[in-house]
Length: 352
Ligand code: ADE
Ligand code: ZN
Image (cartoon, rainbow, N blue to C red; front, top):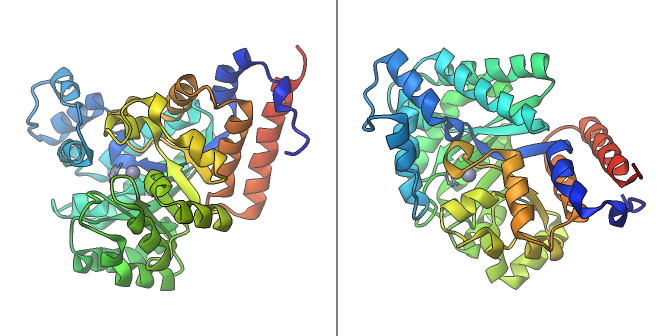
């Protein structure tokens, strides 16, 4: 990395490089990859009536003012998922899009409680998703793992019941996370359930500092013992916390298009990703809920780099490398992927 000559990569080559470079995605809610067309197709297949007349009417409702205004529509969209093949179809469509963006490893969030409350068995959810992950690995050579998220607007007892129901299927997922409405639901509400997941040998992550204060990032670290922070962009309000995150090499899974759509930042030009990188934080770029926020991985990279001139080839390399280093893959896979990344950059730096 130290020998990489980033200055030899001309600016005009950056868009092609952003698209072509191998990358990992570490923050994607599979229910947030449901495109309106697939929502309507599944609604028809399952005889579900939607509160929207057409694909266009549904898409027109995607004008969010904050996280909650998005979540209300996101949970309505997920109501069409009933059978194992529905979960397969949803994950397969995402994995095809991810592979097309040169995502070679992805760690996918799923929200079992969104489905089990509607009477869909946990087994139906996990089997459909797991089948898609395995088949995508065989047919598209993309590595895909699952992370079970607890809905933080529900109680810790409900999260614990979900974890107990999931543990017999532990070989199908690699970790647990925490998502949904952040404000008023601090990480410490889930201390016992994260302790239990930790005991079971699962990886731990949590959304913190998206809309919630830096104190939520601290409690995700100190009470839940998470290994990555999802979003985390509000850490900059607490300089001592920024220092700590940098010193610990704690990864932040940043989602630029999501942040703009949910009004965390007014425009992409206001995003603090350059400041996070300049502070030495292990930031990554991710799509969060690509069907709702205007794009998948490469769209996130393209729009972020187009709006922020401080970001160049060096930052592109750092972001992609961080995505592999912060993943939960084994050391051998990580170094293999980083070698592939190095090759893509060496080629871009070589004269035509
Ligand atoms: N669930 C899906 N997307 C989310 C986000 N950005 N924050 C919290 N919960 C979510
Ligand atoms: Zn998220």
